Image (cartoon, rainbow, N blue to C red):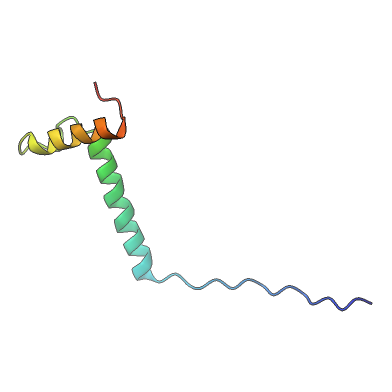
Length: 67
């Protein structure tokens, strides 16, 4: 007979609702920023061309083809 010890089951720490909502908010903010940088051609930034030009320059910095 061998003296092997059975493996313990892995116990994961529970994820709190606050951590889940924080991760969701950060993900949504990053997706909005990615949309503005990669796809917005002035549809969201109607209050002037400053935001549009900033995002346009960001597209060039990241190498995203925009025109």
